[in-house]
Length: 416
Ligand code: GLY
Ligand code: MN
Ligand code: MN
Image (spheres, rainbow, N blue to C red):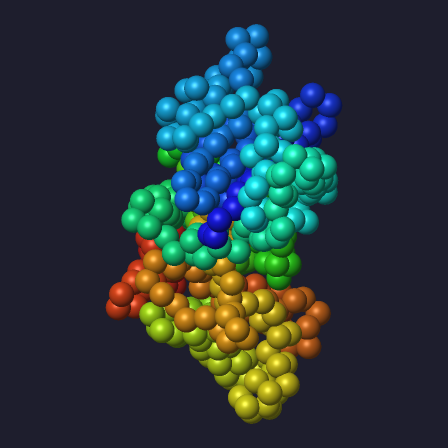
């Protein structure tokens, strides 16, 4: 960062309905830099000949703490979290014009919250209004997220350790779900098994709304109702991962409700698994971001032809992109504090290269919607297999490998 001042508010609380709030989740950028989890907090960083970190947060309030629980207050926050200075957040409007005076640049993420944008502009205008006293207002406003995105993309040792722990809890949850599944029970009951395993291991929340999609629901990519009942002979697709101390895991497994894959289910499942294996082989330093996706698409496209789902040659299917009828999403995304994590996928127009310390998902699938013009025994089958990969010096480490995914391993785990 060049000389200047950065302002980074954490996320607001959100009301769910009268007197009831959604569980609070801090802003990922704010948390990345501070580790501070309370709402109503703002980080200010002054970068120049001397640098300084300043936290604005809620004051101690014995009466509110009776209702809402402990809050640090500025003094304890400063010493516990290592800020240079800390002040009550109610002093923010009063102090900011002073802090912004004579700063050449303001670093801030404009555009994500209109009220904050307006508040910052008021501060800047206040400084401009004092021009006759000899102070200058920031001449430039620069995006704060851009440099932080690059930092967040490369995980350090403690982040990697946390992500391994989150992955472990989530793989245990998927194993638990496989053991619990049987015809007649609700998708919601399987969701409850996942949540039970997350919470009993200390994960604060699911990293995203779990998808528990039996039968043809698996062909709806964002199915989250989880309201149906598991039926004998169907597959069930579960896309669920916990968030542990802010870090996400993201796993999908697909398995038979009754513990045994049928012939057509095997065909589709093994195709998706080989697409995933080919994609994983491309995850290594120096590979372009798109290489795992391209590898998966190639395997899937050939498979769609071989299974009679698509007509034409492999080249035609790739050229016309007819494979998108059954595989319409990308094979992965960055993973970290956000499930779709920060970080560019391209640089100067080219796919960026993988580097050790990056974490990405690898999640090919095949979704054959009922009513598709395909051999009848494949209609209604939806399969996705998703793991989380840490790029290492020599290739990658699949940190979610403890959730079974070969047909033999899944059937062995589900055997009564
Ligand atoms: N669970 C969200 C995703 O797989 O991208
Ligand atoms: Mn994913
Ligand atoms: Mn997922």
